[in-house]
Length: 82
Image 1 (cartoon, rainbow, N blue to C red):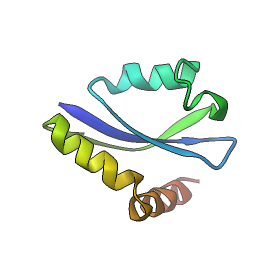
Image 2: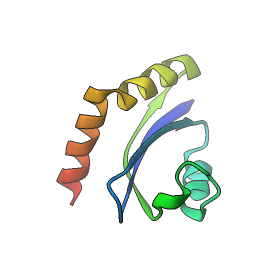
Image 3: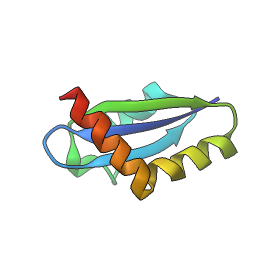
Image 4: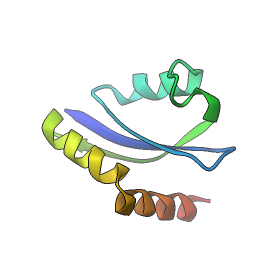
């Protein structure tokens, strides 16, 4: 099982989309600053996650959420949470 997730920077206008087989571990790595890509944008909040059965399916969903349409949907999800 794989999880596609999106985290949003609390202090800046930044949304990161990724996939993992262990969501809690991956989120902790983001929160603690171990990931080079997201370190400057800390702190974060989880705004979206979905579980996929295979890595291929998860990668396809990750690509969708990273696309223009996907990012717009994530922005609207983020705005409804504020």
